Image (cartoon, rainbow, N blue to C red; front, side, top):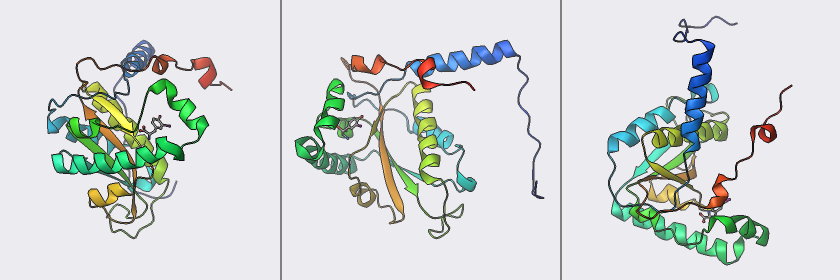
Length: 223
Ligand code: IYR
């Protein structure tokens, strides 16, 4: 190992039974997460969103450049602008841009071009991937493994919001260049997704299809 500044690392003491218990308990909580498409307009404290973004900001990432930016939208004007632009893209998607195969795959979800939750939910977290910038955010230094890094950060963000009792939806209008203008972000940042966060509205449902999870034996192999 090359000479570098380093700090001792250790973990809190735990025995194997505790490790198994903690892993299963985390799994069971994450299993309760649903993608929500029906949001109430009830407000949720900004502190929850701040803490979740700080959690996301600890994600493993390329060269510790932390190539992400979270634009947090709560103003009715900005939410409306995002909804209008997203629905325009979605109308084109559902009316012909999407292949028959893609539309068939979406049928069990019951989605369509209407995205009222982009206005009703209290928070929209627009996630940007920084192709350049380095730790100093200079807009020039090359970043590495950008999509991987930001994808992991999004997983941690969603998990923290779920742990805090919030419903989320990962929304990916396509194309989503309009998010850069509305959120006033620079050219070298690529919008990756909108994470809608809030509380489910009364009577909210989720598709049965979502419970159809692949078992451990399918999603893993042990060599
Ligand atoms: N972006 C569209 C379509 C959509 C695509 C996939 I893949 C999904 O898992 C869900 C929706 C929409 O938001 O309706």
